[in-house]
Length: 387
Image (cartoon, rainbow, N blue to C red; front, side, top):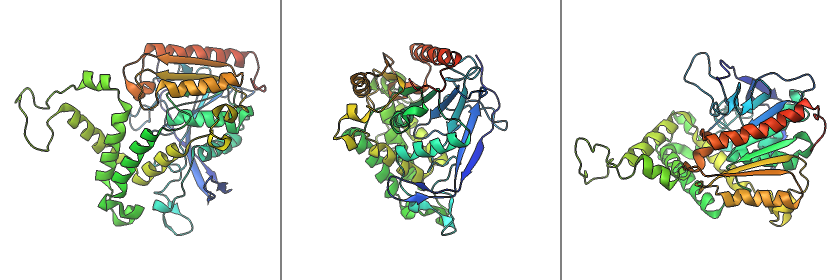
């Protein structure tokens, strides 16, 4: 198994306005995307990968000018990998409002000639899916073999199965949830407040001031990162180790860094503040909060999923306390109640929510085995038939 190799991002422009769930419209927008593998003659082998909060269209491979720029799911997608690009035509799309090339808050608003900033309209998971469907239309893909995502990407995959039931044969939802808990919404709001109260935020128009609300972004990332790790994983990696234990096995008795975990979180926060956009962070966490397909059905997830047609793979991780397995089981039970074909895997992995990005062999084998089935269906010529 190897990397897909050198890849190049592509851009697609859309002049026609997209009506958003908020009632706002956005026109003249661009979506960045990458493709890997070859689309077959009947276009039946396309797989859409939906990204999580701080990821992008760069799912696999590397860029020619940066050999260390491996895609965020390079261990999952590529030749001979679970999502095998020798078989499937894989598409990664960067969502609207992102800071990795698709139109977002840092881009110029054609109505004002200035960056959108905080004026960029709020978007939802469903808005992203609607935009992705337009991209698929332009690529001539009427139906995906599978739509797949982890975490926030899993929400998008689930939304695809509801909004466009005829346009996907398989839906792969990993480490996700049908809606955020109050605790998750609370964590997101603490992170947003860190950004909103940073003096360098300037009401979202910090671009014009030539500054970045780095302190707010740093704290937001630190808060978020804590929720991605399990207690056991954090204890094993860091415990109560002192940063300079080899030199001085004593406390500093101050508010600087004493513990290794403090050093790690500050490093992650600093790194994040160098490349991520503050307005994008606010938008994406709100989209997470708003996702709740059962809301329009009186809170009944079974009713929300009754129009789905796809087959499903749902996977969760035992130590994921952010999107705990019980939430995945809610999805599974609702699908079973609708007599859908569902494969469910609850994987005993120590890494918390971030496990969906890592290479646990049991996890990889589950996905690989499932995509063997998807490939067999492609081979049998079931392209135009929903499951």
